Length: 206
Image (tube, rainbow, N blue to C red; front, side, top):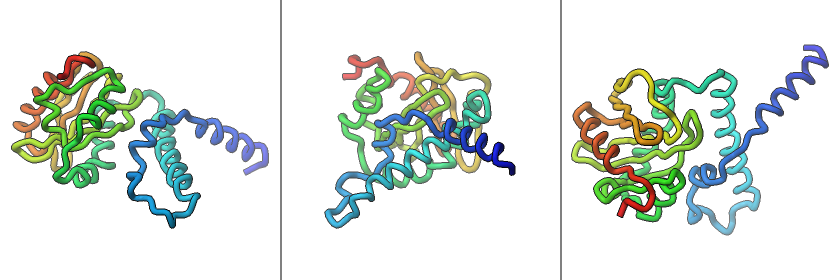
């Protein structure tokens, strides 16, 4: 590769990686503060943050270089395959606090009605094709069900799909859309109704 081509490549790479990073999203992906110890290297936090920034940047970069945002169906499949099982395992027998739910959903001017909030085992920010969204695990009679809220992503095309060992119901929300990912279609249908009725504008969830 000639020197000019090398310089052009380096410039394009620099421009591509010069991406804004959402501090709240970075914070949601970092390990809990209590996991740190006084004996840790002072550079450990910076190294973790740099790795997270690189990971987020790489994901956004892949979507940007591919052209238009991916189809919702492709995004949901790839997102769930990337961390769906890990998030389910992480949720365990925990229950998200009201503060957790408010901190994430409040960023999108949303609240969770009591019927929905009482079933949220875990919640965090996540990237979506059109910005950040919320990744939740709900505890249901059929077992844990994953919900990905995409506040700025419109739903077009299919409303149901299946891959690996899960089925997905896609639903339109007053603002954006959501994916309900669970072990069977009946569970998805019930949870879809819960999500549609339980995600309400901020200030109306109590």
